[in-house]
Length: 180
Image (tube, rainbow, N blue to C red):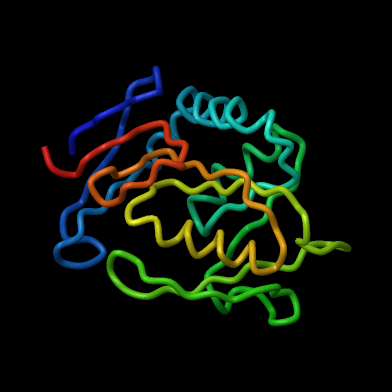
């Protein structure tokens, strides 16, 4: 793994595992960055700084690592957090929109929950996840949010694997290539 850009001042503890979750995939584990309290605080603070002037009403985070970062950022901004769950984890009556997408190693299905006492229409939303690889998770979430009337005002990740995408509209704290 080659680091192309690093916005974090604290030491990076990132683990990798070849051939996980299947042969040919290198799993990048950024959870040590959240385990270290100083680094986790720095990550949350940088996202808050990025988002604070965008008049965001909700943070949306994808299961599961997007929950960790997104909920902390939403709390600090004093706004709502919307957890996008894997399909089948929510009772059908609580699901606003179900969507499918291709991941690097297969298909996945997720669900956008209903809001409480309001609709998505016109709500300003910022999406957060841990890693942007091909971008399919974020693209599918954005499409689902827009289909129910939400306005996605930005998207951010801790790490962007640049060699797998050409996204210019993703805020990231680390840009990497998997190959040296």
